[in-house]
Length: 187
Ligand SMILES: [Zn+2]
Image (tube, rainbow, N blue to C red; front, side, top):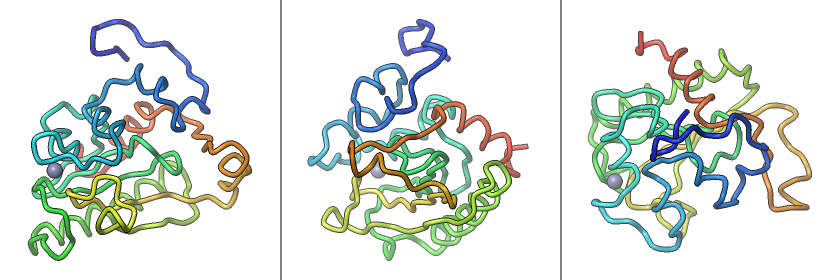
């Protein structure tokens, strides 16, 4: 993997680096980065990470699969390894503003995401849902996105409580490659 300036990225990183430490993301260029770091301010259409991501190649944008009306990418701030987001391409904030076609494809991509995560990482369960509005917890409230979070019986630990840290055992790029390869329509 290479950084945006072409330099070789370090081969290994500590898993704990990935949780809310800005430095960790300086090695992994993605178009989401600036918007995520400037939290509190909601991006408009021009700097919306979910509008910008599809204009980059899949590896750069951490995109796992592209449909006609919606696409799937890895969350930069995962709750668990393999935490996916299903977004319409269109910049709409609310679920009831999505068209029938968008709604149907968000649903089918969510189902495929479950199957792929079950197959690749033996997830035991899932949390699936949408935060609607910044006050409801949406980080990027202006662009609809459905969370698909794989769960394992053993995924709870003390880190979030004692250190404000989630241990994410795998690199984002590595997880993206695995999921993209297993995604049925990518072949
Ligand atoms: Zn957008």
